[in-house]
Length: 166
Image (cartoon, rainbow, N blue to C red; front, side):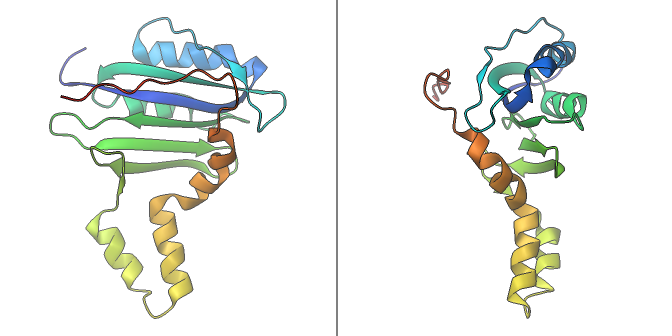
């Protein structure tokens, strides 16, 4: 790995069983290592499975993971990449119905909306519904709404320990 190192998490919220080994293979190909996920049944989608995988890699690894998984049928996932030296963090969200959404994030994981995007939304300030729709789009609200039922892991799901800061 050349350059600055970062880390993140691949959250596979729902995948059919037949797709699970292909997801591991695609992630392993991006990470240049064999990966094995701890798959558990997804309570929000009978017949689907979920997994989380913490990764470490060069800046941009999150984007490469998102590209490797983009557009796969019946797959819901999110990828986070923590902010690292000179680079904002990122979050990618994907659903079969909506496709992929990307947002820059700050060091706390909050979505950061660029100034130009806010100014474009403010062009519709006279129409509160349109303004709300533009801001919801910038925040990825539709992706959050669709993924929220799948984010809840259910009983017995693996616990993800937070990294100690400082």
